[in-house]
Image 1 (cartoon, rainbow, N blue to C red):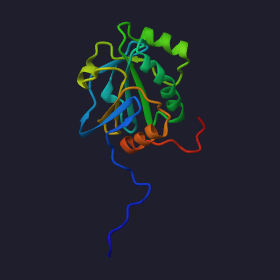
Image 2 (image 1 turned 120 degrees about the horizontal axis):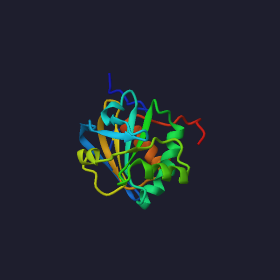
Image 3 (image 1 turned 45 degrees about the horizontal axis):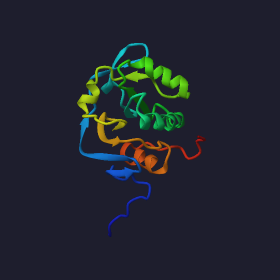
Image 4 (image 1 turned 180 degrees about the horizontal axis):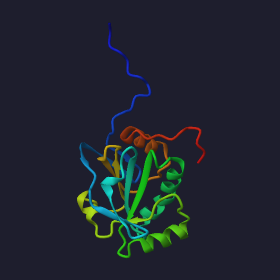
Length: 179
């Protein structure tokens, strides 16, 4: 009996790749997501490692004054509208000095309605994951392991980024879902 061919729909490996102004770095040795807490818009502290499983997680680090951060936020909001939070939760963590108050104002001004308001108030999560220039987004699988980091802004609804979500986090859009 000869070798068995792989099924065409089998998940592809999570690999480093470029996306215009963004660069995804896949981790050869995934690490657990930080156990430090972020703050939600009610001022509650929530440990980041309590969120994954059975869903995947995108943790986006941004500020309201960062132009690339501001430019990618609407496509991130539309992506969350198209994917159930039971499958993928997108968590933008604002790093502005004023915390969630600036993020709330930004969300209202730019009609961001599908993303939670949250802050990495003291930068502990950013520090744990060596976040530098913004925006940066962690790709966290259903087991709470960080599979890689996307550095720079992207169109979150573009085919290459959707393919990356599928290959790294096993998350895909239902083709019949409307935008």
